[in-house]
Length: 427
Ligand code: IMP
Image 1 (cartoon, rainbow, N blue to C red):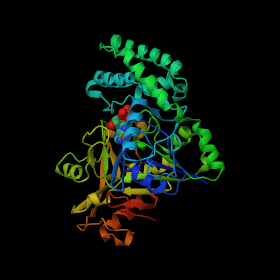
Image 2 (image 1 turned 120 degrees about the horizontal axis):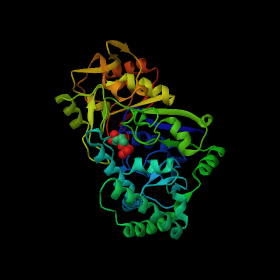
Image 3 (image 1 turned 180 degrees about the vertical axis):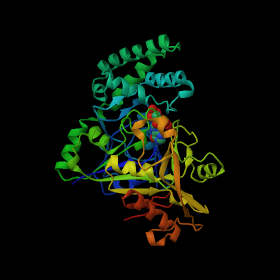
């Protein structure tokens, strides 16, 4: 049995948790492959509203093995807190159900401090990171000085290595940024305790996934963030430091492309972005404010208000190509109900010329000069939250979805029409 990859098709916050939750019901493994606790995946089920940051969205299903994969970066202290919250809700977060790849890199409190210091130093050019230490941790990984989760297997040896890394970080905090050193002794002692608690969760993640595939099991690769935050193919430098696209799933879990049979791109029915960087269809007016309020567009991890704008088919076409999307899942269609007219960007105007292609590789300056070329479509006023089939939707909502499919060449196989688990139109 195959791998289904689920990725964000925009700038993150597309509602991936919901769709992973749907697929998890028939899956054997749900595995996070990139990012860390900068993510916030919301799943609403059986009276629980779970905001998951590191734990995969399959945790609600007792039959699913949840893996935090090799491509992720894990803050052991926040992971333990998240596990505690889930345990209090009665969920099983034992090592039988939740596993941590030995190759995942660890985020230390000093990585977080360095993230904040670097953002402050950038001033008005700040990226607007989540300040969870994600960039500095991937930087240490690339420099081959990072700590890997597998080192926690021997907590005493691990504590020594962690102490050396904390000291190196403190040197930068003090001498490069002129800040106070973080309390090394306290941090090391917390990490030592965390290592003891997490050691039983460590596994060879790629071996686990490989075995499962050989046995014909179904693996869901759960992406965090979104295509345009990809380090290689996103809107650099306003990106995250990992690879949220489908290629990142291969690297981050250790599977080959032939095992992937389906790549689902989650696209919100409009566009949002948190943090800095150009956003061609942004609505900096009352309408943007309306979408933010109705759509509750505030960050799950940081609480920051999200920037809101019209749906951008130029972005979705790009996401379809770089991920090899087989399907779209359009989320939050209900949030657009009540608007008299909808706008949909079909191309951009760049320096007087029409372009159809998202110009990610040319960088933020070029994207900032792109003006969207819109098509206008009629809105709908009906409540659509009870629709369970496409034909239940008002004609205007059906036409909106059909137009997205025409512009991208990818079927919108899933459409969410409300926050509850069952408020979804399925293929
Ligand atoms: P970092 O991942 O914290 O380094 O942040 C880099 C950029 O990615 C910033 O613009 C963040 O707002 C954005 N970002 C990181 N994680 C998420 C997410 O889960 N949803 C949306 N944006 C995110």
